[in-house]
Length: 188
Image (cartoon, rainbow, N blue to C red; front, side):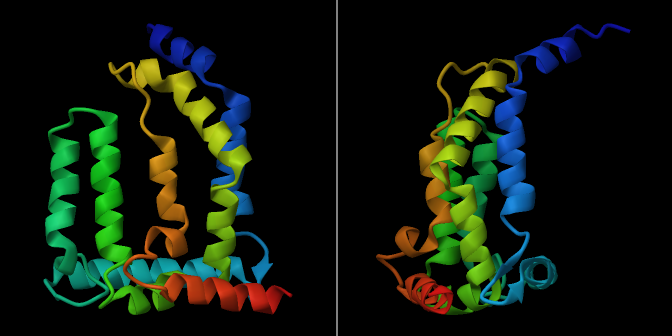
């Protein structure tokens, strides 16, 4: 069996940076407590809500907890995947899709109530730390030639804007900022 592809991947990956990214996304982000809430239990609640979101979507329910209301943005994102041209086109479509889901003033309150809490704030702060972003960029650089024919890396900074909902949605709603303020007050 030819292992050359595997060996090329293994030797190309910046494993130290990959470890930092994985720790940030998988353990540091949701472990522990925020505002006295067990964040692992909070994450379990969020996963249950994701199931409800998907059920509503597949049932065709045009409600806040459904992709039906953002079908156009989801369609553009899925088209960007299917008709892949550049990584940045994919990033752009993803960011626009997230904006339509998270920032719609008619539904942002319900989305925030369901998915954004002090635990989520803590998790997103962990993920968007400068050291995490730097490690993510190093990781992507280390494997980019193996996974893409493009020379230009995707815009990681643009992708990371989604992880600061208060700033990301500030033109449409202040609901995430109010939650941030409440979490900050509880930490004080």
